[in-house]
Image (cartoon, rainbow, N blue to C red; front, side):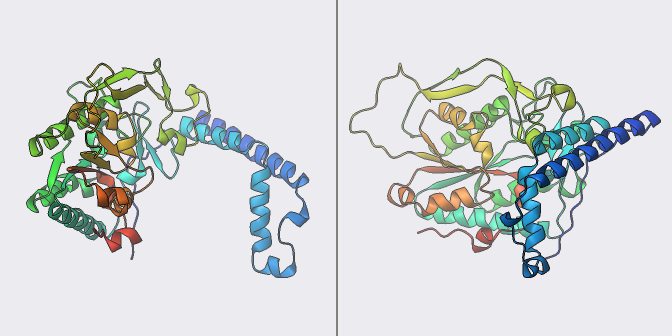
Length: 378
């Protein structure tokens, strides 16, 4: 399957003689430091620690083993990488292969811009997975609710260096929602609630791919309202949300991708600041009955968006009922749902509602083997 990758949002600062001199001196320093690193690592390398026979050399095992060995023994590898990346960002606003810097210290995931030749076929297959799953769950008395998380770049195009969201995905979000709704799948449009009327109130982190606490709360309240309109007799539980610490810097995943977690703020985009919060059952509320059912009425499946910014806690508080969160970090489009539907807890005690949170950007990428197989409900 052929695919092509195109990026937008990149850019560089205009070159001046001073910039050129500073860049040359900086990168010369990095190169000299690299020579020192390799020399220091080589001095501590035991020839017996990696394949060294003639056959090993011919088949590449010697050089591969030496490369790994030297890499592990470099005395200041992480610091040098952070220093080089800090120089790259400071001089030319470079973010590496996974991150595209924007304006005002905003960062964006390259995944939101990638163009794939077959993205429409990939999207069609994923929409079929969602609609087929909704139909199969309905036959078992479970309502599936889809919450598509709009791209951060879609919501904040003014923060992109190019000033606009990629034209090839301009209609993707509305197409996804309209297709699902036409197939009878309960779907929530989160764009209205994630659109801030105040330019100073961001609803996504600047240096992270995810929504922030304000955005997560708005999204959770929208999901809760949608669920309540479908199922109005969920068991009631009171929740409260309280701060658990002072306002502190939050190192976003995009900063970590740039390997700028541990450098001074003047050498990187300024991290977001946030006071952590925690949602728990209201201790002042009346306790549940001793013999009340323990079946969780709502289950949340999805991605890291359901694990960040207290989205799960906000959803429980807005719904006023228990929500089991089985979302997964790095699980992609399908994995957390696939695992949950195959688990004994689903087979023996089905919930009333499953909320499936899906980031918009995941619809375009090539299909994984698990996605090609689809979901099988028993």
